[in-house]
Image 1 (spheres, rainbow, N blue to C red):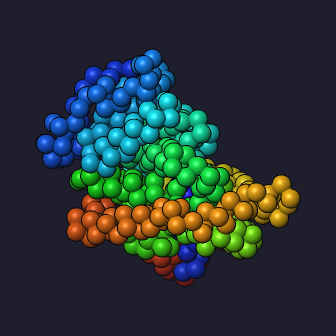
Image 2 (image 1 turned 45 degrees about the vertical axis):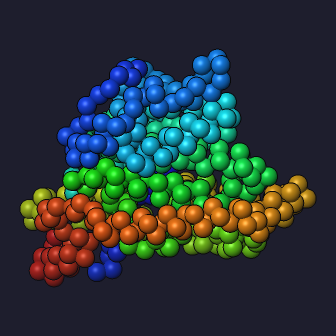
Length: 404
């Protein structure tokens, strides 16, 4: 999973006016129903062997401290209803496939740790990534660098569940409708399903404080259709994925996607050109007018954007190239097979059920969000961009010398 920079949202309006034994849960996660925790089996009982050679279906790899961290996240995940569903399904499917899922940590290049409203997050790179054909999952090593250990554990637990869901979904395709596996590589339903799974995990954790994932779920719940649509512009892997309509006519869908990505890139480039102005204005209002405390979130977001601006543009360039390459392939003789596979999948009732199941689970998710709610960000008196703009314009009128 990759997350686009949240700092760009503020720029858009600028200037417009191997320890495997049981471990205790952290306090933030101890508000789970006691029964749910006590009934969870030890890790060794959760992952069955796949053959007489006692081959495990799950392997945690890396240095000792990394294995301990991942084990704790896995144990937390296994204590949750949605986590148990994901892990049980993985164990069953991987046992049949005689495959081992390997989980490790990786320090992704370009990662920047960000803090907004006390919520720690990762910008500029991936939270984690899964490669279903290899059965591998890599979570960002930077999660271990979170200052708040409670947030770090929750972040790792949710991200781990998301990535394991990718393995689960691809394994199920391989076992049941393997002829559509190539088409599934270009289906947004894979990422949507993983986002739905991670959202159920967020709710199952019953967190008392906001995290990056509770805020992501808040955005999802606000407008589910728009949220899923935006995912397709968020990363080169998602850029070449479509819904059922797009799979039915991927040549036309690729053309539309390419045009949209070019538009978005141009908009982002214009926003980034405003970044130096924003930084100068923030520096002035903080140093001269004593607004350091009330502009801290804006300052932090702008600093993150400054640090990740190259990755932002490169990300869109990679996405544009990926879609252009796919478009050319689909219109070529070698691409005829993939084109036929995508169209066949979109027309197959069995395949369409993937989307129907996603829609049903999404409805259940949104109902839970409405019923249970999400922890709210604390009001720290932070100025938003509009308020900053107003103060800057006022200062320009009253103290023009400040801006020469």
